[in-house]
Image (cartoon, rainbow, N blue to C red; front, side):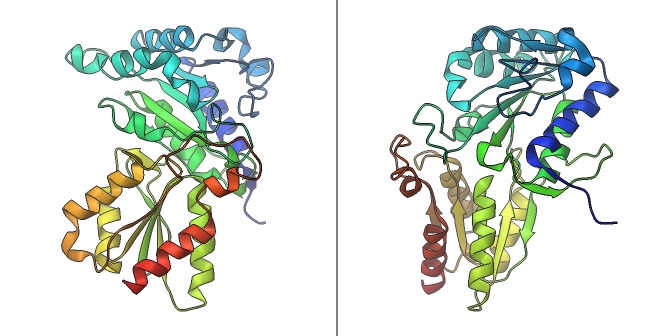
Length: 327
């Protein structure tokens, strides 16, 4: 009998279902998460199983329901709050970076904030500039928040379970382009620990550190260039904060070359952070300058003709790899 294959969205749904069945303190809230089953179908069927007290449809008031989730976490619940698009984080920024991120520290460790804020990022659907951004680096910048960004169904389920069990606020970011991909996922409960990267492909010539949907593009480039004798190692951080420095730096030490591929904006972004880490902690291991593959520093275009040109492409990744091999 072969491995069970389910989609990224189904894996997330299964994680929520298993955690809600196990612990009545796990609750879900957000816009359209109940009756509608979530705008991307991740919470489908949960309100029928657990009722409207534990699966709460909220008004379109992000500061209100995210604030309510933080309050629920402080008094012992484990809320999973859905922010429909990461682009809307500004509406509740005070709740996220001034309250959730700081309360445990400011209360001398006496308060725990076991909150998971699930949200959606990524372009590629002509959803325009206000629904297509990848703003994960903003959350990574704030002390007190943990940030998770899975790329596969297996990682999605295991990381969400670990995030729900964690006693600190976790920003759980799902790329909208990954919901339909399938992969092997165990039916039983399991955890993928936060702060542990995964080497998706081993190689000896070039390290690619890539996030979310960019992992899959990088793997396709790696398979293509392998036919020319360029052996690429693809590292998926999975957890952006805490970050697995040992795996990333170990890979750079092995290959001597680094390409970082990320859909976030280029200035003060996750890609520039990894580049800075490489320059400050692995400079003597580098045989060539670090190459970054990111979108340009512009809003995401709505135009179906322009948006693919804006997004990091396999061709962009291939050019960066070839350049660093030549240097």
